[in-house]
Amino acid sequence: MPLIIHWQDVVFYTFILVTIIQLSHYIYFFRRVAYFTPGVREKSQQHPVSVVICSRDDASNLAKNLPGVLVQHYPTTHEVIVVNHNSQDETKYLLEEFKKTFRHLQAVNLSHEAKGIPGKKYPLSIGIREAKYEVLLLTDSDCVPASEFWMNKMQEGYEEGIEIVLSYGAYNRRSGLLNKMIRFETFHSALQYLSFALAGKPYMGVGRNLSYKKDLFFKHKGFSSINHIPGGDDDLFISKVSTATNTAVVIDHDAITLSEPKTSFGDWIRQKNRHYTTGKYYKPLHKWLLGSYSASQFLFYPLFIASAVAFDWRFALIVFVIRMSVQAFYYYKAMGKLNEKDLFAWWWLMDMWMFFYYIIFVSALWKKPKKNWA
Picture 1 (cartoon, one colour):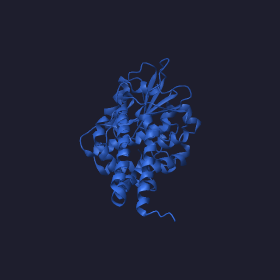
Picture 2 (cartoon, helix red, strand yellow):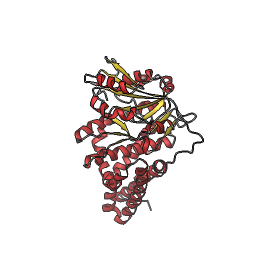
Picture 3 (cartoon, one colour):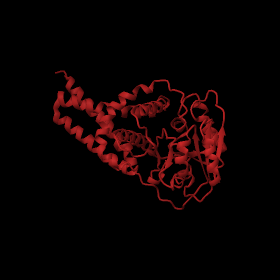
Picture 4 (spheres, rainbow, N blue to C red):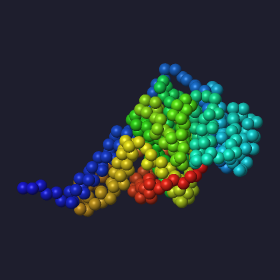
């Protein structure tokens, strides 16, 4: 007799396949963040460090956040470079006032644009060129270190052969559902890029909290291969120069940076659309892994409902509970590592929200990015 497969069976078996893809990411990749333990050091180290910050018309954020960078507890040689890119506000005068108190602050004032180089790649390149030291530590003017040991914790990631150090750039906790949505998406994104790096498949970093060596930057001719692309000074550059052996991850509450999240849904949508326009330039392996994970997450709830209605709700529920239990376990552990434990009570709601999140942002994958500075 010929084997007859009904469409109800196809729906359920597809649901199982989607669940297996999800579980494989949690068990193979995400557990690496959930169970992250820093290696034991035989001796302490403190490299000379150059912190580089680019700013444009952002004096208010610099006034609030720059002191947190300038007062880092780091006795070894270091400097803080702020590249003031053609600001029309009082940034220049603010930096002059800071320099009176903090001798290790260096202000680089740029009064012109770089033709054909959108975004902040040009001022960042100038800041890196001006840096005195090999270890570069990058953050933004709207970010502040979570502790006075940020600089020390980040430079500890450099062991023999390491040229890139990735860490977490979080957002401040505020009241309201939007804040939880922003912070959950940020956590979820970090869970992916940090776990991929720990698995030997690094593909991005975030400019809010990123470190690499100056020699690596110039060895790969800086941003020359991506200068025509708005954005990408963090994720595309790391995608290009990172390898399984030259990239390290630092996960420590003291190594986190904090930014102020958007306060309106529209502003957040526009910010995320800018970020996602670089995804099309990732390496094929990373696009496949990230794409299969996102697709499986998007299809999980619709296929669960379809399987429960058209196949057998008991079998569908068993698969659903297995996936949700595994996810809850690894989320709880990973949120603790990244200091986001307050989000755990909301994880199930945020997970369902991700279905609509993918619908909202999928168009960014083929849209032409706008040439914004940030």
